[in-house]
Length: 102
Image 1 (cartoon, helix red, strand yellow):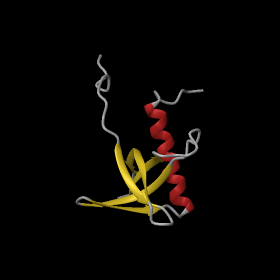
Image 2 (spheres, rainbow, N blue to C red):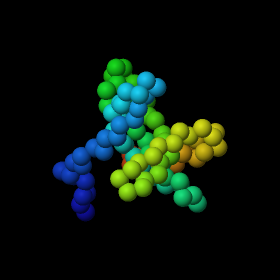
Image 3 (cartoon, one colour):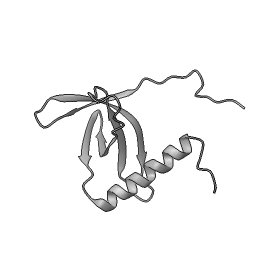
């Protein structure tokens, strides 16, 4: 049995998102996923240059791709946010070896 990820480091995907003043900040894309039963695609990102090193802040965006263009949309609907959060947590649990049965 082999694990294809052993010794295989992927380059992190970096995107730039402007802040309120128009300054572009660097973010690393940690996960992209689609929600079942929807055409919507989501990405989870973390800031690269965080002043607070202990911060585990993760940002979620709905996104659309048009060729090389990437458009990000804030998730403002509580129902949509709940679906994204649940999907993200499920995927993280699977990556961590699956949720253990109680």
